[in-house]
Image 1 (cartoon, one colour):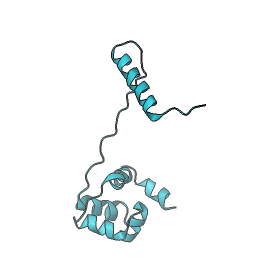
Image 2 (cartoon, rainbow, N blue to C red; image 1 turned 60 degrees about the vertical axis):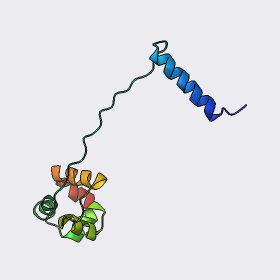
Image 3 (cartoon, rainbow, N blue to C red; image 1 turned 135 degrees about the vertical axis):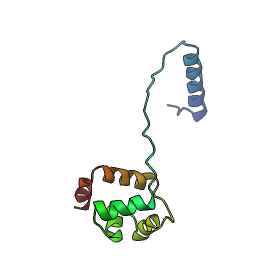
Image 4 (cartoon, rainbow, N blue to C red; image 1 turned 180 degrees about the vertical axis):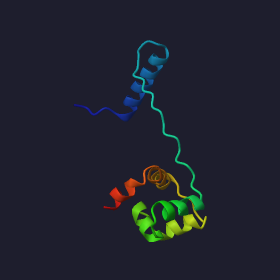
Length: 105
């Protein structure tokens, strides 16, 4: 059996897309709602979360977040801001502080 070439697959897909556009065939449509971006965290909010909510030192808090203590220190000094997964994790932990205990064990 001959292996189909990539170009043949691409051409087939383009032909199907054109047929769908003309209404000759129906395609499957999926609508996905994307999550909003994680909020931006200020150095004060991070320090408040660490000290007042979790009562943790920078190294312990860093361990919880799986980042280096220097990273937490840089966040709290305003040299860097958490982004991506770190910002989302901070958001989740601030919404449900009981998760910290489960993650730590």
